[in-house]
Length: 328
Picture 1 (tube, helix red, strand yellow):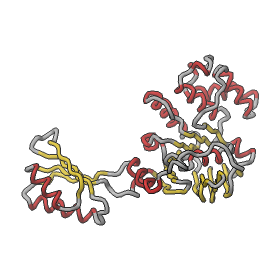
Picture 2 (spheres, one colour; picture 1 turned 90 degrees about the vertical axis):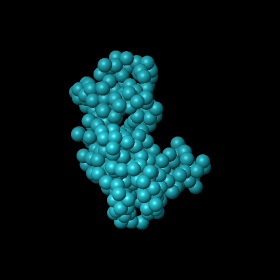
Picture 3 (spheres, rainbow, N blue to C red; picture 1 turned 90 degrees about the horizontal axis):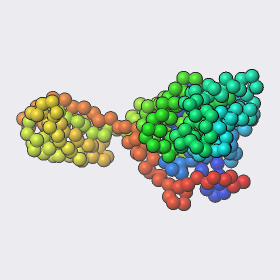
């Protein structure tokens, strides 16, 4: 559905997108991640046809991105949704359907369906300017949906919303993947973990990682180990500390059995062989007269991996904000 090859975007001397390549398969929901200033919004504007590129090739559903067919195939929801506050919701969406050349006979059913899927039917006759931000975001989503495009590009759809509003919009987005290909940019990593099939991570305009959530998580080793031990707390901490493999070690009594101890041990940075270190730690605990009930590997979350992948190149104050205008 989306093919990006060697995409480059310059704003004068500033390089916002630097030789970026990735693909999005038809029918998938893909999270597009990166820190502030990474080039996400610039890339999404190029994909949606709102912004020209300096170099590279982009196709949407087999069409060059700057063609009419590519634009018809795309529904775009920018981070700051431009709405007409004086219009009623249904009037605005019918107006947008006409601009998007939805046939006259289809406009009413298309608008009704878009309002239903974006969950704004209950405010159809209300003035947009009188709506909460959560509802305005959903009106923007209905706008992206109104022409039934096969591709949806959503740029920070939950930005600035409270937790309840986030949950409402997130529930809407979850259902969209059944009928659309979705490229979703967000800073809320729990949304990606809950909604997306794959993840694309960029930093300073370059591709950092791409794959399923599970594949991305494997790019960072486990965070540490969780032990369930029967025996003396001080001995447990001493043995794990003396192993030399762990940094922070925390212990708490087991909620089900006070005679058991839960010990969480974080790996030291730079540890080369966590597998061998695990074997050595278990042997040391047993050698000290403790009984090991279980050992569990603490998996890295998507948030852990994102921080690890993007930590090396945090934007400076000079390039932390993507330019809003083309410098042609």
